[in-house]
Length: 252
Length: 388
Image 1 (cartoon, each protein chain N blue to C red):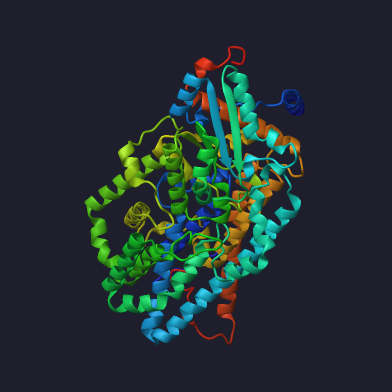
Image 2 (cartoon, helix red, strand yellow):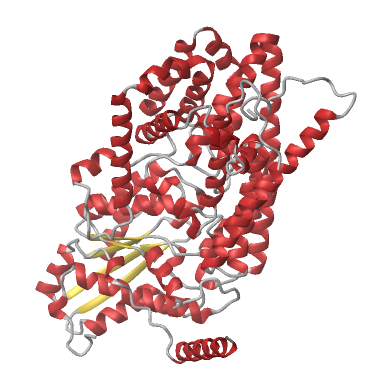
């Protein structure tokens, strides 16, 4: 029996070391992606003009603090990732973030976003502030629907992005009902949802990141944003049907 | 352990199912808890809240209805209001614990990834507003919505009970009318910092009043209908339908088994305003339960179900303890380990703590009941079907 225990310990120690050597990747399984929507304007812009203008419209979790925060946050990482994979396409990602905005507050500023950036695709990150303030679900949903419609009328494709997975604040911020509304609106309007919550939770379960960590570890936040940027890029390529434009070299 | 006291008039099924509902609410309130997969909200439209509110209405009418018949409107009304006050105090106590928890998190957690989520702590920066709004029941942290609903329902209960005792159908009809008008005109109470109540009292009162109506003779009227085979068939078919829909929530996005027209018809399933689908789901569950768990079910006297019955008999204390334990349990999952076995251990030990507390309360109650000089058998809300 003792020998058996020793063996188990040795094997698990080896396994632990193997994990330490190879950091777990932040790949995302296909089941967590909304891949059956069509980003038609993205497809047109890339197909006809070889250019793609994306605008990220978000709140605090679309940016990182510090002087170089914006260049390390996921919108900038998305731009880098897409430019790497679609090197024959001119890709620009603009970022508009305003801390503390509810979906309804953002909806009111959408016309400005459209005229200023003329995006082909708007990635609308929202929900966290509504969940913190416990906004009414009906109103949250109405704001989402109206916002998506405004963006569509203004000539942009829309991708919704939900909240971060934040285990430490889970008992204080009830994100579930808001995430459900976002999922429902995405399904109803047939637009992709970047399910940031489920994806980060998957990373947590897989041990890719430790979201329970405390302290000012900027490295963790930067790695997470880099992974988010790449995962969004993958979804844009899937739903924009841009596979034919992907560089051979960058294909895994 | 003591055998459950079988006194006449006491329907142990109420205690049993309220006790189980309290356990389920506790399990559902711990985020990321693997054990919460067993709770009924995952297998249909309604959840433990419906059970809790219905049984609370039932027991309130049972206890205070008798008091109103025997001692009049003023005495029973005063007793109902005292109960509402107790619940209010309990709610504020839980709020204090919540503030302690987020204050701790505020000072110990500085992960830059979650700068946005930390805005939850803005409430700490303006205690003048937050605490006053909490006292007014307008500011309610996550998972602390049930007790304020219960308080409002009890505050309005004396006239409702008065009407129920005289013209039960009129009372039930008025309740239904209020529910319909609430859906029509979007009535609700305002909340802080924005929005309105998570459990809309104008909608949820229907379940409470329906429970009260059942206690005051409605259940007897419904009994023949519950014996019809057609009722059983409809209930089972509806539960099956709800089960299939619920299962579709857990399939990957690519697989949709629910046709689009049906999705447009049933969604959103509105918990705030007690969606008709949820209410119907509860009715179907209740119909099956009443049919297959008779009042004289021998298991009700067995030791296996005794812990749940005990918890159901001290619902307010056990409910509050459950809210506290769910905070504490989540805290432990975050600070110590979120491993599978820890989740199971926390879930089980929380329920054990609820049972132990209920047993202790029963012991105290027996102690006081036997003490000399005690007024003999004051018509207490805790008799017959547990507390109101």
